[in-house]
Every structure is written in C-alpha cells, then in structure tokens.
Length: 391
Image (cartoon, rainbow, N blue to C red; front, top):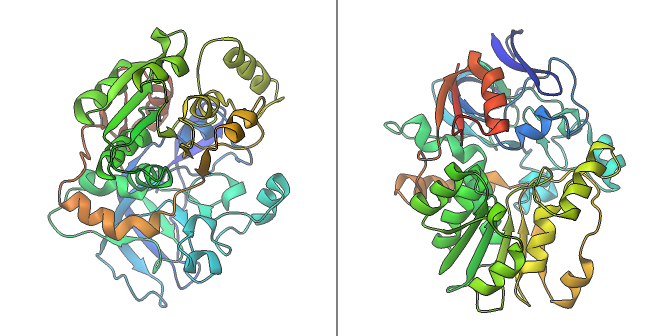
C-alpha cells in the first residue's frame, strides 16, 4: 500500500509499504477513505516531538471502511463505515472506566519513555505520533490497523459525507473539550488563542456552551476570516497591537476574559523580547516549548477566571507566570482529548447541523500530494487552513 512516511525534519515521503494485518484479535483493518493533516502533525514535521524513526507512518485524523475484523471484535463488522479517534484506548483500565481515555494505562507499549520524561504514568497510545506514544502506524495511508476496535471507532450513518464527520477523529472533540475545561458559564467572554483547526471548533463550541462573546486571536488573514465570518467571533490580529493583554482588558471593561483557551501549543509565535528569547532557547534546546500563548492566557484572564490548554506541549518552559496564576486565583486544565467520551453526543450534534464542518477545508488533495501539502500547511502558503487527503 501507499503511505506517508517521516524521513527527517521537514521531510515527508509517500512510500510503498507492507499492508497492515490483524495482530491481536481485538483489531480491525480500516481502508482509509479520507485523512487530514493536523496542526500537531507539524510538531513531528518540524521534529519538536522526539522518538520519531525514519519510515514511520503519520496521521491520526482518518476514517474509512472496515475490511477485516479480529474474531474478538463484537461492535464492528466488514463494510462498516467508521471514524477513528486519535487516542488508542483499551476501555477496561481505571482511566478508561472513568472516561479518561487519553490516559489509558494499557495502549502505550512504550510507556517507559514518557514516564522517564515526565516522571509519571504515560498516557494513551496515539496513531502515527512517534514511538513515545506507542509507535503505531498512522492513518495517512491506504489501510490502517486499529487496535481495541470495540472501544474506539464510531459507526457513521449512510448518506453522510466523509467531510461532514472526518473531524470527529480529533479537532472537533478537541475543540469541544477545550471549551468544556473552561467551565463556561452563560454570558461569559471567552478568548481563544489560535484560529487554526482546533481553535475553529473551540470558538463554535464556546458559543454552544453558553459564551456571550468569543474573541479570537491569530495573525493569518484566512484564519481570522473564518473565525469572524463562519464562527462569528470578534477577532484580533496580534501583530497589529503592541500589547495584546492590555487590548483584551480594554475590550472587557478592564477585567479580562472569563475564560482563556490556548489552542496554539509549543510552536507559538509572538513579538517582543520574550518571544524572541523563546525561539533562541528552543533552537538551542535550552527550552523545549515556546510558551508565548500560555503566558498570555494567564496574564489576560480575569481574576477568578479559567485557563484551558489544549495546544500540545512536550516538555519544559521558561518564565512561567506562576505569581499571576496564583495571585489572580485562576483555574487551569489541560491535556489530550478524551475523544471516545464525546463521540456519541458530537455525532448527533454534527448530524443536527450544530457545527460548520467544511468551511475550514481549503485544500482537497490526494495522498501522493502529502509532501507538498505538509510544507504548504506548515508555512501557511496558498491560503491553507486545512488539508484533507484521499488515498
């Protein structure tokens, strides 16, 4: 089969690789009908997430048709059309039983790598996301093996297009959980850092969860247009202001937003001394992540407010404003999304038309276009906001 493989920093290649096979009898094989490049895939592309190996198959946003089924699988059969969540979860450990599927104790065979880095138990395995997260082959391929198939994939009704449901695999539930972790109350003002794919759905989710205002922050015109015209947010181009935190306070009567959502993560941009310092330190490996966005969420949030971090961070950061966090009495929540927990409700909301699922897509390509698509999505050229590929 053909698959997108990682070959080194900013180097992707489409190769012919062996077809996947049933390994455990709880597996299924999915013939991929649609797959997407996620913003967090760019952390692999730029090699900020370690433990990648040449030839690794990427991709954790995918869906398709079940074409082979292990004998212990009871929920799925050949011919079923499914969307596959990006975290791999066993469904039986304590964390899964509590709904913390992204913290599954049994799906990451390389848990010791994460434990050595973080000093605590590892989270779930993730499709196509380095050996730190299990070394699983991803869904940017013609076929993918899906472990624990009775726990993860959700069946899609007939008559629903791939593009209407593909983002249930990651960015829709991730945006939804980002808003939930902000504990939005009716009438709240929510600020979202990053108008990329996750930010796009975090904005829509914030309104659905009761926000009166959403202020979206980015620097790319195409993303800001989507946030304003499709998601109905007020928008800020942060490159056009010398003091983003002060501007947010002015827009909220001096208080700051009630909820601040970081949908950017470890490759955050910014201007000023700290942003430049972070870029230098990250390049020299003196700092693992660039924390511009998370710093600003804490500094901007209203006293007693909530900070929700859904952007991916991989390690240690510098100059964390703990004093501001403590002094303002903030709450903070973060982590990978427990996709399986939200899929039944979100599928019904998608079918009811609660979300705009397709305006985000700027490029519809084939799998063979992946190397140029990664470059375009990373560099934000050609108005690229989201790439969907078909094998």
